[in-house]
Amino acid sequence: MSDLPMDHAANPNGSSGSALMFLVAGAVIISFSGVLVITSGVSATTSAFYRVAIGGVLLAVYSALRGELLQLSPSGLALGAFAGLVFAADLWLFHASVKAVGPGLGTILPNFQVFILAAVGFAFLGERIRPLYVISVPIAMAGLFLLVGVDWSDKSADYPLGILYGLLTAVAYSVFLLTLRRMQSRSTKVSFFTNLAVVSLATATVLAGVLAVEKGSFAVPNWQAGLSLLALGVFSQAIAWNMIMASLPKVQASLAGAVLLLQPSLAFVWDVLFFHRSTDWANWAGLMIVLAAVYAATHKSSPPSPSRT
Image 1 (tube, helix red, strand yellow):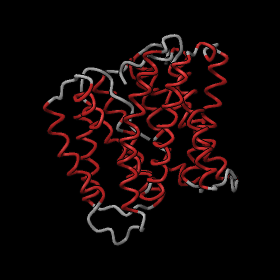
Image 2: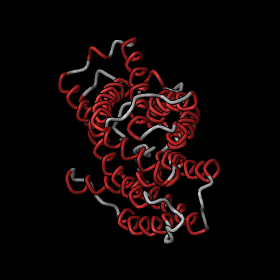
Image 3: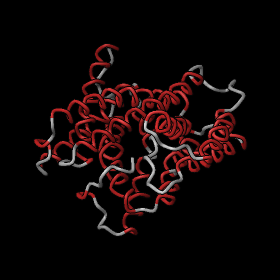
């Protein structure tokens, strides 16, 4: 999403050094998303709902104070509604995957979106496929094979489904990024901050409907769940996203790509440290191979799309 204009309200003082610090901070903050999903102790739909509802309200209040909400066009709102529908599917799949396979693998799998976006760009947008991308795809698949492991005897019954959910998250996230890019390119009078507010609130509306259909609960069971959900909305949905998108245009593309890989890398580390994920040398090797392939696939002259967490 390199053509997304920077939100100057969150512009890290215009210097590349400050921008890099903001980018690193945003990547580190958002790497905890999967951890917060687990510690919330609520269903995938409930955690996803509170994430976008809390974040969306904060973003909307800030956008209203800047006078941007009233500048949204009907077409922009329509795109925002569609993006919200897609993002609802994306978040539900992501949170469900995290609960099934853990925050580490659940965060890494959706980053296969870089290959989907490149394929869409080649097939429909007239973009060129670089030789490095072609090489990266089979390497990434080999790394994924090592990462998910061969022996699943010690895994939960939901583990295979969690892997599928993670890969489907990559598909949904790709559609979401393409829609958000279209929305941002047509909304020249408003910032990414405001568009994300619209998308977040639309997503919350969809997820509220899903909760009703599932006969799920909006109840927050205890203070730990409340703090986890609050942190998801405030930090993962509102603050970290804006820090990353504000910083990307001011950081060298190759460096930005490397920094963004902190997100899935740290998420995997948190899974091992906090939840004692069973991990052997093959899993670690698979992690390194997948991240290297993702980096190679996104290494170009323009800033990469943000990793999925």
